[in-house]
Image (cartoon, rainbow, N blue to C red; front, side):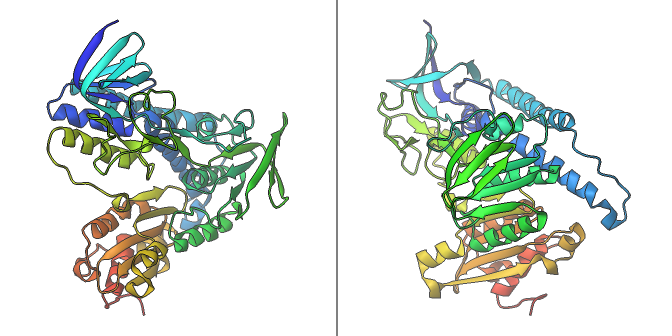
Length: 457
């Protein structure tokens, strides 16, 4: 057995873990980064990056089908899944190589193996131990399923969905959240018949209701079917198909069932509780500065209650490294972190939905405005519909920005600045948005809430 000592030991090399390692090393700390698989974690290898590569391939397929609408002669001749896979894996490989180089350049010691937390800020990997003045827990998350629904065969999660070598003819997607609607969007563009089952009343139910309804209209127009407000009851499969029964008696059949009911914190059997770390429903309990209650032990990313987003993990990893270094970083609440669902059309938001704002502030204290992308020249050129919605406190700051439409994810940073800096629409209205851009739609909403709409009546 060999004992090693570092200033900071990071358990988990995903978004939060490697961000903490990089920033701590940049601040002059010696760092060990322990990862049982590959640095980059789910986001790089099985989540954010590969799924967005699939979504881009789907976008190209849709553009090829519609090329004649803009006077371009092109023929869509189907999906070459081997080619799509090579493209996707090539993107991931390049990003992974770059990350490995960055970690090495910062002088971080990477340790391959499954780590287990022990007392005295120590992580055991096999026969070796790694003790740090500080330990950062960043073990990520896993794909959940439902009681009685066993993954295997034709019943798959997003990880297995990425590995499919053919486009399924028919797919049932269980779950209308981010993962579910993104895969539904991809498969529909690839030519599959898709049905989404969501127990709550709307798709992307964590978004503002106006965005959910707009997405439902867009999916209906695309031919993506959905069953809302009905729960899953059971599933069975044969060599040829999978059958799903819903609680209302509906029976659906398909080639594949994608289980997309969310992700759970990966904290079991890692020694956390034995080392004194408090766990609640699988999540690590932390204070607002991400301290676990065990001196010198911190937690970041998907194991911390709240939004499960890679960029939230990045931010928290950087925050903890700076906190360790005594820099007193600013706490960023979840409401100020942008969310994007990369289906077609994209959904992006930051801050409070109108319903949440009303619940928090009262109906009379909330004002909102919706601008339809039909009035935006750039969106018309791109052939996308959608809308922009801004929510403000009456005579006060912007508290929420909500967008739907192709490429809307690229606009949400402006919304984040408005919400996080508590800007009033009157503060933003004088600033000019370049023409013709989709950002003008957001500018129009700010103008309208400032009492001086330009292109609306």
